[in-house]
Length: 294
Image 1 (cartoon, rainbow, N blue to C red):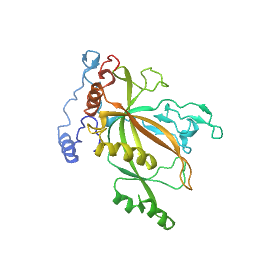
Image 2 (tube, rainbow, N blue to C red):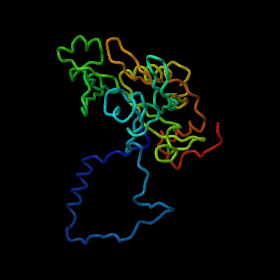
Image 3 (cartoon, helix red, strand yellow):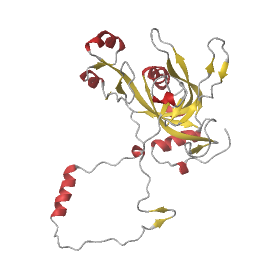
Image 4 (cartoon, one colour):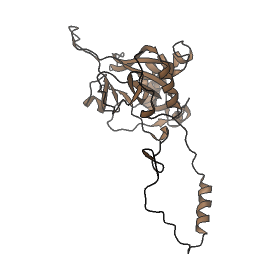
């Protein structure tokens, strides 16, 4: 299903707009202009009735949750294997273990706790053989578009035909998630601004593709939603612990992969919070008031 936050407004049809313009041009040109009074709009409480409104969620650019890999720009600022919000805030940092002695030089931080709201329809993003800084890879919205672009989502087919110019595409799914504030992030109401129970939360999008799509989307979220018991009440009915590990590949380069394990069933307050988000009827100030610890 496609996640749409709040209620959108349909655009004015072009023909209606043209009719309106034609009608305006037909008005007598010698009518005096109506100039509004130079005063502020009427106030209602602390808000202006004109100019101060709550934009729908579809007009909001959400921060993204990213896993830092050994390639890419994020590795220059964050430890590979970390989970980072909005390319600015580290939420999880993996351990640093001496491979020869097994001594832990840096312990991992606790996993990030997320609650899934839902996901957008699948898309397909090109996966080049080599990382090119700043390169924008093509995104297709159906497998027919992938084939029309000379690509495939099947690894074996790509391996067989890549010498002939076949392009490889990965499945990509955007999940909308609620993220609980980790202890390593300051509680300063700048990032985690929603209070539910005695904890703080924020909203984000998490794009899963390639090994992450297989490990978490297919391996956990989709499976539990369709066949398991953990998500029989819907995606928001349970939270998950998200961390990462390095995964070796035969003949390939080891890759960081996210790990998702069950955390706990969602409280009634969290279920209500999720409902308010999905209907677009919430702001940070409207979030459920803090209550006693669960």
